[in-house]
Image 1: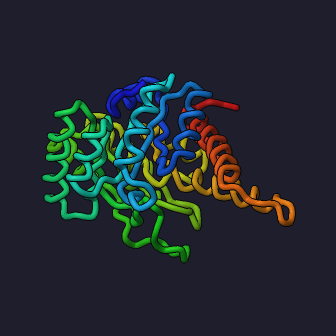
Image 2: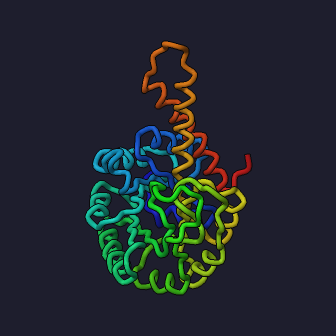
Length: 289
């Protein structure tokens, strides 16, 4: 059942949970995510980030994502994650995406604001919803960047007062906030400031807050974030890692001289990603195993 980002976040608000948003830059991850959501009967957000374009073109995977959402037995939003250009956002909207994220967080405030306003105008023509970002987690969605374990000095925590102005002036449906998470692999325990989330919610009239860099965060901190007002959690790196580990184990398990078939390896990766996504969705949805 294809639904908008706004609709699925209203469900999250009613249930006081967070909806898992999982990137699917290949068919195996798309199958894993939809299978996990249907098994748990939970709403889900399928995402594709612009930085994944070299892995598979949006023009190829996007229509498949929309079709999978329409066929699903649970509510599914198909969302563009970290759209960096307005033209790319328009491509996603033309394909049928029901949510887009404009990421102007690295730009000066005024430019981020004006481009986000244009994004909202574009999305409204198709009935889609808009997420935007204020603040910075210091790394791209791919997780590229520092691997030394040092604190990332490029992080900029979201200013709740500025967030209130930004939400009011843009009319966005959800705001990605920087409150201590990081894209990619966590090299040490993140220092999360949940007061940022609480104050953003209070000052913006309870706009849904989005948590990026969700992989690797503890279950306790996920629950703290949800209680503070997070309603969408982006999760990809550790799902992708689970698939990679399963593929590696599959290859290691082959007897000497036994041929390796990509289809066998890819299915092992798909099944491992499905289990990882299920575990994440259960945490986000408050399901006790």
